[in-house]
Image 1: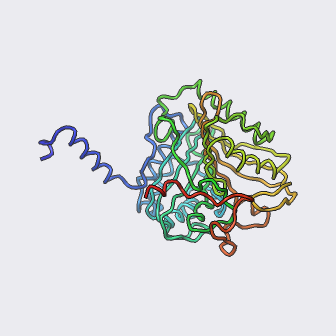
Image 2: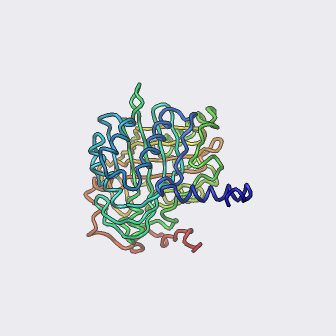
Image 3: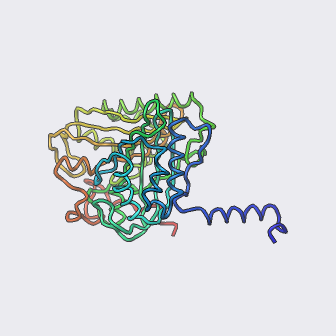
Length: 379
């Protein structure tokens, strides 16, 4: 029967068969290439190895350990989002956040948007799809379909092909928003939105085979200039952003389309709330027109911030951000912030369920209600 079909039909049937047999966790994961720089190649191989264990192989620690051991240094640090402690080594990671994630989302699909790296650094930005079934750290499950924004940053040991540090961040406030609750006032911008780059550079982007070192260095200079201007010098001009830029901000900021929205709902409130800033970077990696930075912003809290008055304390905010550069301007940005960690410094636990407010019950000052996810209109 099969060989009696046309070549086109045979090809389509094979594609359907592969799609049906592929574990959901493998959705939109990177294809490892011999052209990948060392850090990206190692993380890519690790990602592929860990997804092969899906859906039940992770439950056997000995099996899981043997699969993971080649990729991680013995005492590597895993630094997750607020709500989980930093751990050392594979056992503590597996016995902590890793197992809790798989219990919370027993069936899930990871979708990588960006994946870039160099000799000792790598980073991904991703979203996962799944039904939230069990507690995830301090958060109670919604029992409903949930989209989870995730970013990871990796640092390798110098002279060794193993991962030394993995910083991971989840937009937990967006998970709560999807459950109908909002610990912080929402801007009127669309919330919980994260899309692929608006260029055909591969999925995930970039594809290492086509990387241009000249474009890589240009992207690094543009992003570095933006960080110095907006985060360190607190320039309000947004000089380094393209006029038709899109910024995929985390909850409660939302997706800003164009410089005006970006300035009004993120940059200006940040500058009005904080003074005497300092920025430290743990990871700054670029590949082709894409860059990723992970670090900490610290400053004096001297103005209102997300509904909370000035404390005159020095607060810190961990961030993970990705960018696409178009010539001499940033065309797209993907940002995630550990706001729960920052607010703990004010004595406020954003993950405390007893203080939740329903979505729509409070919002940015003088701002209309947040827009619905534009994707919802399609159904």
